[in-house]
Length: 227
Image 1 (cartoon, helix red, strand yellow):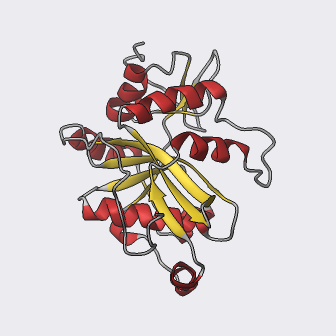
Image 2 (tube, rainbow, N blue to C red):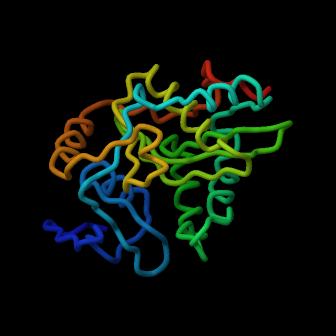
Image 3 (tube, rainbow, N blue to C red):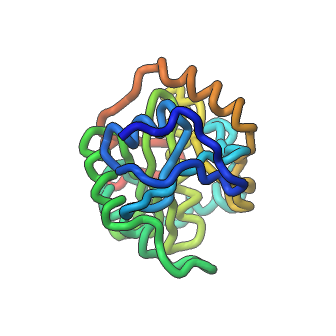
């Protein structure tokens, strides 16, 4: 599928409706156009928000309480241990003010294929072998495009993001694309940048090599690995 040459997003950032979730379409959206889908189905909405929320991995804001929880809560972290499960938990975790999910079955199928190709990845936080928090997203060049997070225990999605930021910073990743700012993201160090600034960085990133391979062997200092 080809996106229109000229996009005219509305005030919410909605730039185009239609298309598909084929690998080539999703890659074109993220790598070249700065777009992301906000649900599957026959008429897919593609968003291009202005400003864009980003998080520099080295600037993740670690509070004393989060650092203490990482040391004392008995939690473990794994990368790419259960991508499909992480997506499903993001889709089914109940959130205040939300009554359905944009992570539809066709979204899960499409991103499962991206995971098979080493493009999509997950981070999971475990207690006694049971996942209690995590996130997933896509990588192109040295950008990580965050899609969704969930937590079943306090701070576990924050710990997943902290672990990922440590791993990305160690590999010279430039930023985490958080898409749209929330108070939660702002509290963790995310910042808004104007669309032209984001697009200039995206264009430069398109020329950088991608690490499209499994993250299963990754480890980080903030949490011990799941054995």
